[in-house]
Length: 201
Image (cartoon, rainbow, N blue to C red; front, side, top):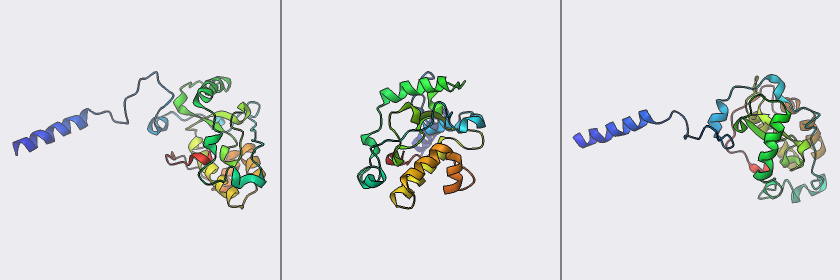
């Protein structure tokens, strides 16, 4: 009985001394922060919910067309892994774009280098005109996690034949918040989607 009490006491002590969230990470390492850390970030101002048109107008991948959807973005087993740019390219671009956008918060983990027109609806993979540092958290809830849900929705609509590819591309490039309200509803859901399908982004 005494040994049981000793084990229980040791477990309780370990639990009380453990950090409150996730794992410890060096404070200078911002590139790979878990979702809870992004969730703790101070929300960016509402102006950051849309990309700057002069920097990120959007760009499409000419290899993806309405006629070849079943061989590209809608093919079984996924598509975007074959076109997604490597991290050595995206991390440098992410740093440069955060500076170009003038964000005071330079921590990489607070942003997603987002394809404005997502790969899952034929967005250009490497074109800087289609990439922007989208904050995870924005005042009002219109951050990257809400846009992830729209990307899934548009991919499913295009691949089921309910929405033409060009219309989906134009809707999300012109104003992704207006597209969210049209295809998902008036209020954003900015809960992180840990299970987000890679082929839809």
